[in-house]
Image 1 (tube, rainbow, N blue to C red):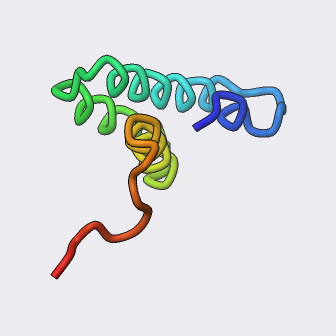
Image 2 (cartoon, rainbow, N blue to C red):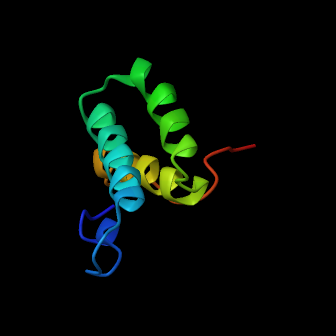
Length: 79
């Protein structure tokens, strides 16, 4: 997820919004640093701060796509 997208289209952020953005950035940094053991706690904290599941999923998806540029989209299960 682009950091600019987290800034809510350039609008001024309130303290609650800043906490949400910070929680997502910490999650993104933990993924990049491959500190996976920290991710669940960071996700729980983000949820407690009011971050919606879609934003959390977007951070995770962006990480996965950045590390696997040739990765196919959609269901990876094969019969």
